[in-house]
Amino acid sequence: MTDQQRTGRPARRPVPHLRSAAGAALLAAALATGAAGCSGGSGSGSSDRQSNAPDQLAADPLTAVRNAADITGRTGSAHTATELVTESADKKASFSGTGGYDYVKRIGRLEVQVPPGAATTGKIVEVVLPGTVYLQNSGAKVPEGKWVKLDVRQLPDGNLVSSGATDPASAAGALRGAQKAEAVGTETVDGVALHHYRGTLDLAKAADATGGRGGDGLRMGGQTFTVKEVPYDAWLDDQGRLHKVVEVFTFAGVAGSKEAKDQVKVTSTTSLADFGKPVEAAEPAASDIYQMKPTESPK
Image (cartoon, rainbow, N blue to C red; front, side, top):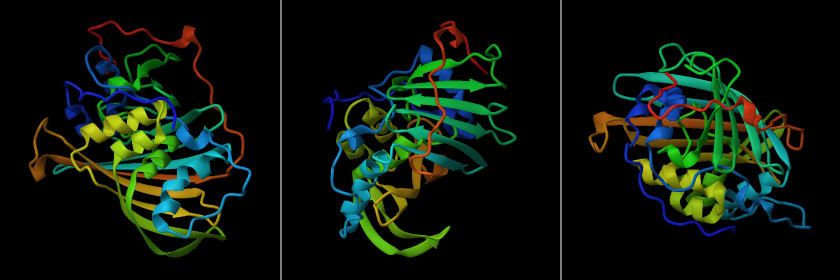
């Protein structure tokens, strides 16, 4: 576990902007002027710890699930496909994306397709590093080719859903907080035998187990989401590597409401493949960062 984190404080504005699904990605940039919170980011966390012994799936389901992030991180990199479905009482939207994450350099890149009717238009490109997310969107009021840079502490959900995807490091890192795990069975996908587990996880405990800036986004989500026992399904191979994870997050679409009709359910699916294959991801140059004015919205 890396640096000890100080306890975060809830954001002043608790995510009504997420109602329009994760198209709030660039609305998140508006929060740069006013949202409050603790640390944020995504990274490999304790996956930095190396072992000379070959990785192997643990016999105990809970141990296997909790180990998945570290084992996956030791592969060096992975390519990913994501899907994020948001459902409220009156609306449903689905976002899909592709990209990858380099666990050595701690940087990832995702390209997310925005569905019709979302708060923003055009493709969202996201570059994630521990504590920082860069967003680029052709439909936003940002000059072409420029990026909006955000500290994840500015995002009430820790960027777990607000950009239309859960980045691979955070999706896997959340499993470090698994509290329940049961073996569902074995399924063969693309010729690979995968062990299916189901249970619930605690994002606050996942943040503590991850440590460093990589745990901050998980901690923010743990403060914001209204269902604290997050349901998940995970598929691991014989080495214990994560091939797929489905996590279900719930937040109040109406600030402070606990009424069922005001809740928004977000089902995030992250699939990983091509372990060890190089990932193209680079931090945008300083000259390509768009500096927003305090009162400016990117919408």
